[in-house]
Image (cartoon, rainbow, N blue to C red; front, side, top):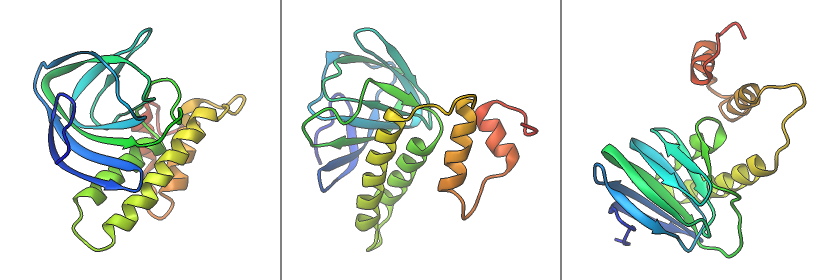
Length: 187
Protein backbone atom coordinates (compact mmCIF):
# COMPACT_ATOMS: atom_id res chain seq x y z
CA UNK A 1 0.00 0.00 0.00
CA UNK A 2 1.55 3.35 -1.00
CA UNK A 3 2.18 5.86 1.74
CA UNK A 4 -0.17 8.84 1.87
CA UNK A 5 1.25 12.08 3.15
CA UNK A 6 -0.12 12.59 6.65
CA UNK A 7 -3.03 10.13 6.29
CA UNK A 8 -3.76 6.39 6.29
CA UNK A 9 -4.30 4.64 2.95
CA UNK A 10 -7.25 2.23 2.83
CA UNK A 11 -6.86 1.05 -0.79
CA UNK A 12 -4.82 2.13 -3.76
CA UNK A 13 -4.04 1.29 -7.35
CA UNK A 14 -2.08 2.64 -10.27
CA UNK A 15 -3.74 2.99 -13.66
CA UNK A 16 -1.44 4.26 -16.39
CA UNK A 17 0.10 7.49 -15.14
CA UNK A 18 -2.52 7.85 -12.37
CA UNK A 19 -2.18 6.84 -8.73
CA UNK A 20 -5.57 6.48 -7.01
CA UNK A 21 -5.67 6.23 -3.22
CA UNK A 22 -8.58 6.13 -0.78
CA UNK A 23 -7.37 7.55 2.53
CA UNK A 24 -8.55 8.78 5.92
CA UNK A 25 -7.25 11.68 8.01
CA UNK A 26 -7.52 12.16 11.76
CA UNK A 27 -9.96 14.60 13.39
CA UNK A 28 -8.56 18.11 13.89
CA UNK A 29 -5.29 17.09 12.20
CA UNK A 30 -3.05 19.94 11.11
CA UNK A 31 -0.39 19.53 8.45
CA UNK A 32 2.29 22.19 8.00
CA UNK A 33 3.18 23.73 4.66
CA UNK A 34 4.24 21.15 2.08
CA UNK A 35 3.94 20.33 -1.61
CA UNK A 36 3.35 17.32 -3.79
CA UNK A 37 5.25 16.15 -6.82
CA UNK A 38 2.24 15.69 -9.11
CA UNK A 39 -0.98 17.54 -9.97
CA UNK A 40 -3.95 16.09 -8.09
CA UNK A 41 -7.67 15.80 -7.51
CA UNK A 42 -9.08 15.19 -4.02
CA UNK A 43 -12.70 14.05 -3.65
CA UNK A 44 -14.05 14.50 -0.12
CA UNK A 45 -16.18 11.46 0.69
CA UNK A 46 -16.81 12.32 4.37
CA UNK A 47 -15.63 15.01 6.76
CA UNK A 48 -14.03 18.25 5.67
CA UNK A 49 -10.74 20.09 5.41
CA UNK A 50 -9.22 23.41 4.45
CA UNK A 51 -6.13 23.92 2.33
CA UNK A 52 -4.25 27.20 2.66
CA UNK A 53 -2.08 28.34 -0.21
CA UNK A 54 0.16 31.39 -0.57
CA UNK A 55 -2.76 33.71 -1.43
CA UNK A 56 -5.89 31.60 -1.17
CA UNK A 57 -7.73 29.18 1.04
CA UNK A 58 -10.14 26.50 -0.17
CA UNK A 59 -12.69 24.68 1.97
CA UNK A 60 -13.60 21.16 0.93
CA UNK A 61 -16.83 19.50 2.08
CA UNK A 62 -18.34 16.11 1.19
CA UNK A 63 -18.88 15.78 -2.54
CA UNK A 64 -16.39 18.53 -3.45
CA UNK A 65 -13.23 17.99 -5.46
CA UNK A 66 -10.11 20.08 -4.87
CA UNK A 67 -7.79 20.33 -7.87
CA UNK A 68 -4.26 21.65 -7.56
CA UNK A 69 -1.00 21.62 -9.49
CA UNK A 70 1.98 19.79 -8.07
CA UNK A 71 3.74 23.10 -7.50
CA UNK A 72 1.06 24.43 -5.12
CA UNK A 73 2.57 24.48 -1.64
CA UNK A 74 -0.14 24.40 1.01
CA UNK A 75 -1.04 23.48 4.58
CA UNK A 76 -4.06 21.44 5.68
CA UNK A 77 -6.50 21.66 8.57
CA UNK A 78 -8.93 18.75 8.91
CA UNK A 79 -12.34 19.15 10.54
CA UNK A 80 -13.54 17.73 13.86
CA UNK A 81 -14.62 14.51 12.10
CA UNK A 82 -11.38 14.17 10.14
CA UNK A 83 -11.78 13.34 6.45
CA UNK A 84 -12.23 10.35 4.17
CA UNK A 85 -10.94 11.21 0.70
CA UNK A 86 -10.18 9.82 -2.71
CA UNK A 87 -6.84 11.12 -3.96
CA UNK A 88 -5.92 11.01 -7.64
CA UNK A 89 -2.44 12.02 -8.75
CA UNK A 90 -1.30 12.32 -12.37
CA UNK A 91 2.36 11.34 -12.66
CA UNK A 92 3.27 13.81 -15.35
CA UNK A 93 5.43 16.84 -15.79
CA UNK A 94 3.94 20.22 -16.49
CA UNK A 95 1.03 22.08 -15.01
CA UNK A 96 -2.03 20.23 -16.28
CA UNK A 97 -4.13 21.76 -13.49
CA UNK A 98 -4.17 25.52 -13.10
CA UNK A 99 -4.58 27.40 -9.83
CA UNK A 100 -6.08 25.45 -6.90
CA UNK A 101 -9.84 25.23 -7.21
CA UNK A 102 -12.82 23.60 -5.48
CA UNK A 103 -15.40 21.97 -7.75
CA UNK A 104 -18.63 21.62 -5.74
CA UNK A 105 -20.90 20.62 -8.62
CA UNK A 106 -20.66 19.67 -12.24
CA UNK A 107 -18.84 17.04 -14.18
CA UNK A 108 -15.56 16.99 -12.20
CA UNK A 109 -17.18 15.82 -8.90
CA UNK A 110 -19.46 13.39 -10.76
CA UNK A 111 -16.50 11.77 -12.52
CA UNK A 112 -14.54 11.57 -9.26
CA UNK A 113 -17.48 9.77 -7.58
CA UNK A 114 -17.65 7.32 -10.49
CA UNK A 115 -13.90 6.70 -10.16
CA UNK A 116 -14.42 5.95 -6.47
CA UNK A 117 -17.20 3.51 -7.36
CA UNK A 118 -14.98 1.73 -9.90
CA UNK A 119 -12.06 1.61 -7.44
CA UNK A 120 -14.29 -0.38 -5.09
CA UNK A 121 -15.65 -2.66 -7.84
CA UNK A 122 -14.17 -6.13 -8.00
CA UNK A 123 -15.26 -7.05 -11.51
CA UNK A 124 -13.14 -7.55 -14.62
CA UNK A 125 -14.23 -4.28 -16.23
CA UNK A 126 -13.27 -1.97 -13.35
CA UNK A 127 -9.67 -1.33 -14.46
CA UNK A 128 -10.76 -0.48 -18.01
CA UNK A 129 -13.53 1.77 -16.66
CA UNK A 130 -11.05 3.49 -14.33
CA UNK A 131 -8.71 4.28 -17.19
CA UNK A 132 -11.53 5.75 -19.29
CA UNK A 133 -12.88 7.81 -16.37
CA UNK A 134 -9.42 9.13 -15.46
CA UNK A 135 -8.87 10.33 -19.02
CA UNK A 136 -12.31 11.96 -18.98
CA UNK A 137 -11.56 13.59 -15.59
CA UNK A 138 -8.39 15.13 -17.01
CA UNK A 139 -10.24 16.44 -20.06
CA UNK A 140 -13.13 17.80 -17.98
CA UNK A 141 -10.71 19.59 -15.65
CA UNK A 142 -8.83 21.10 -18.58
CA UNK A 143 -12.09 22.14 -20.21
CA UNK A 144 -13.29 23.80 -16.96
CA UNK A 145 -9.96 25.61 -16.69
CA UNK A 146 -10.08 27.10 -20.18
CA UNK A 147 -13.81 27.48 -20.67
CA UNK A 148 -15.12 30.97 -21.08
CA UNK A 149 -18.54 31.57 -19.57
CA UNK A 150 -21.34 32.00 -22.04
CA UNK A 151 -22.22 35.69 -22.07
CA UNK A 152 -25.40 36.38 -20.13
CA UNK A 153 -25.63 32.83 -18.76
CA UNK A 154 -25.24 32.11 -15.09
CA UNK A 155 -22.62 29.57 -13.96
CA UNK A 156 -25.24 27.36 -12.30
CA UNK A 157 -27.10 27.09 -15.61
CA UNK A 158 -23.95 25.96 -17.43
CA UNK A 159 -23.44 23.43 -14.63
CA UNK A 160 -27.01 22.11 -15.11
CA UNK A 161 -26.35 21.71 -18.82
CA UNK A 162 -23.12 19.80 -18.12
CA UNK A 163 -24.89 17.50 -15.66
CA UNK A 164 -27.76 16.79 -18.05
CA UNK A 165 -25.29 16.01 -20.85
CA UNK A 166 -23.34 13.59 -18.66
CA UNK A 167 -26.43 11.93 -17.13
CA UNK A 168 -28.72 11.94 -20.16
CA UNK A 169 -29.61 8.26 -19.79
CA UNK A 170 -31.12 8.83 -16.33
CA UNK A 171 -31.56 12.58 -15.87
CA UNK A 172 -32.06 13.97 -12.36
CA UNK A 173 -35.34 15.63 -11.41
CA UNK A 174 -35.83 19.38 -11.69
CA UNK A 175 -36.07 19.52 -7.90
CA UNK A 176 -32.70 17.77 -7.51
CA UNK A 177 -31.06 20.00 -10.12
CA UNK A 178 -32.40 23.16 -8.49
CA UNK A 179 -31.65 22.07 -4.92
CA UNK A 180 -27.99 21.31 -5.74
CA UNK A 181 -27.59 24.86 -7.03
CA UNK A 182 -29.68 26.78 -4.52
CA UNK A 183 -32.31 27.98 -7.02
CA UNK A 184 -36.04 27.42 -7.29
CA UNK A 185 -37.13 24.59 -9.68
CA UNK A 186 -39.10 27.14 -11.73
CA UNK A 187 -35.79 28.55 -12.99
